Image (cartoon, rainbow, N blue to C red):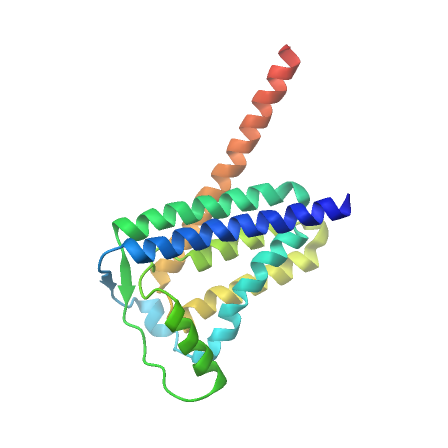
Length: 209
């Protein structure tokens, strides 16, 4: 049983990541020129630092850990929510592509070299909304449990650090972050409500039969 649960979690993670990657890269290939977004007050307040690349990249660890540690009943919710966020964001990237002025990367440190590699493989557009922020929030929400309060707090702090690193690394603007949070919140609640509604209808149908 544990082996089957582990395979289910791993398969669901691959499926969720697969849809995200497909939507992200296809939209980046097919979209037109991006609309330049100006810096806002919050963006100007947070100073740029290439060292933020490390918490930024820890995003690629928090998502699979969420699949591993969340209650089994939430794995399907996380997968569907990730896929829906990716599909909606992909449509926005195609209809209204956005970009921003990225700070030049200077220096030969490890952080700068890793950041340059990220820039070489990432899209300079696909800014609004931030899937980085959306998927981080979904991961934190999937793991959150009151009975495991210490782990929940650790994931909340970790997710907050990732969110801050998004702005400090200048990969997104504050408006992108807010829109990613809004997207994840709406989609996450919508998927939860739909599943609960479907479950209630099925139970009512079984009782009627």
